[in-house]
Length: 216
Image (cartoon, rainbow, N blue to C red; front, side):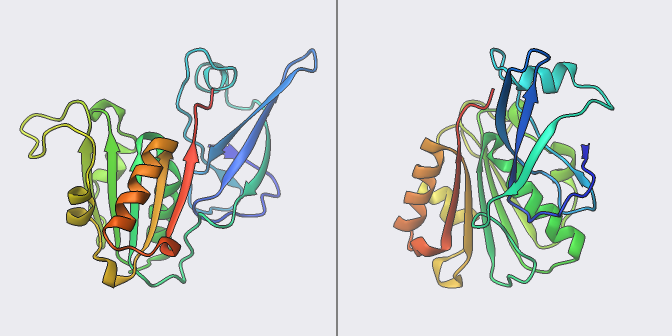
């Protein structure tokens, strides 16, 4: 969690650019999705550690309370959810792609929205899931479906494997409900998920995507 004086506020789904500058003047920058709902001058980032990265090991292992980093943002205006949207929402996440979608879930909860949400969250195995305690909470109007590609919890009803059109049709909204679909994950995940949604009959104009690569 970062305290950002004069933060202009943000929309659920936006991201920031974070810059670190060394004493010798060398600087490097990475983009991180905002995990928090708009809340005054506080913003939350969820950082996945990359062992050989320049930025994430510092943020996860060395950054201490009171340290200062440079943030630019918020950035982005397409991959966002606004509380005035009343259509059903389908959130499709691959791995850490759940972060901006979590901001949407938190925003929905914060404003007391009754817009129905469905989350389809795909990870390699249970230990890769993010926000586990929070997503276990009862959240009326939010349906959650977890998919595992390599290993599952004991007695999980679905065997491990890549997600399929039947996963999305079973856990998502029918196309004639005209949901807005938000898909976030690696490039391969996003392209596959978006293609499956179109094949199921969802209009491409109602599918919003956000891709990410390794952000060390």
